[in-house]
Image (cartoon, rainbow over all chains, first blue to last red; front, side):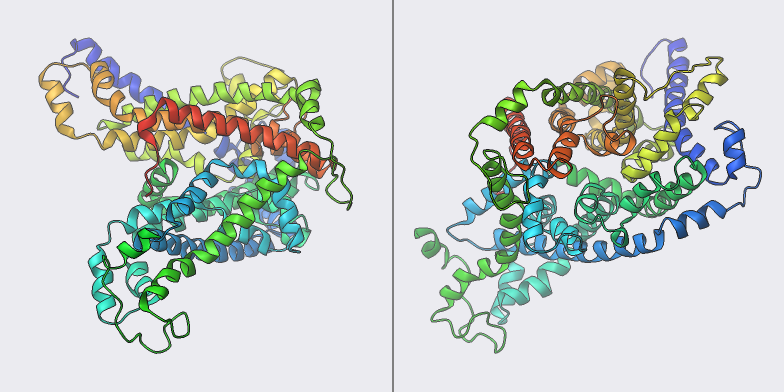
Length: 281
Length: 318
């Protein structure tokens, strides 16, 4: 702030900085705000007025009711909730168990197993779905909630990394003390390691939660049945029946965005840290 | 073998009598035998999932890629390299690679914008947290919702046209109407969506630089640009180069936004859209597998190049 610039530049530079920030904020917000406005309009208002016109009645929630009922959003939120619950729990248990086994034990095959997990991070999930589909299908899991749950649990190596990073900071002397008291490895994992991993668990829950909530590809491929819509696929199906009814589509989009916004507002700091950790691993 | 024996004494030996009901195995001959299987008990489920959902598919995919399998029928014929030959010789299959360049260019723009705002917001500004939140939030939004938001944005008389008409630019341009414009628009959506992640990563790296460095630089009379050039740039190099690699492999694997918005129409089909369509609409599992193998190889190649160029960034796990 106190860089010795010529006085004139010193006044202009911050102004330009703020200008760039405000312009970019507008670029981010305008598309979203317009969709929010559209969601409150009647179909006549959408047809006649411009995209930037204001709704006549700010409390017109008819489109939300239509989107919620005809768009099967209730069952979509239900399905997404079930998938979230199981896949997050599974990811936390699997990731922390793997990290515990790798960090706290010495065994012959440790290096090859590490390599196995490492190499898997290089394989992008989108490319292998052609063949993964056949595997899932052969288990008879096609068109069931278990397909996405298992896929989300089984292919999350990022969370293993996060747990590994964290578990290294937990002193081994704690394990040893418990072992002297007669605790076995499972008790140590369950009673000592897992509770101490809480911050890492929080990170994994947030990243995983947002990723799963937003995922479109996997439910789209594996659960084409109408009753098994997740919020992504249910919203995607708005495209057909609602055709050009932008007021309904907008309401559906806002219904999907609103929970994310709430979570973001309440958990901002954890979310920034979580994604910073998750992406650089 | 030597490893297990010499490490066993290093750890504190198990209590002589394991508590009842807690041993995983019925009466192990010695504590060390139980200790040897314990890690495997913890790793069994993770490894089973890893193999089932990553390695088995990759193996199968390579096998399918040499056949003409349709994904359903019991019989499949070995066709050698025919599928690969088709991918590289049939122009309509090969063309999709060029769509990636739009997204590649978009990621360059994205990284530059993210760098600029990360630098700007690392200094104390008014409303800093608000701006940070606004820039990052798009990254958290559901892809389908983003697709719809921008379909409305680009549609005739939609958000973009209305904003432009404020400035007196009455355009009747169909933004998603021709391949160049459509791909540019979709790549723009990708910038809108992903800049926030890069920005937060860069900002985190910049903020981990000790404040004394800036103070010292300011005492020496360094300008903002000099501070960026000599303090910020070197310390965020690793995370920038990581972002570049993610951007390259990401631009090859684009799927969601173009699929949701255009369904791959007007020349916006990306590599993944094409693969998905080949496999699940046209039942050409063999050909689709070959395409996926090609993509996998390209991504492995890029990663390998990155590891060669920036060797200090290897992931340290063991």
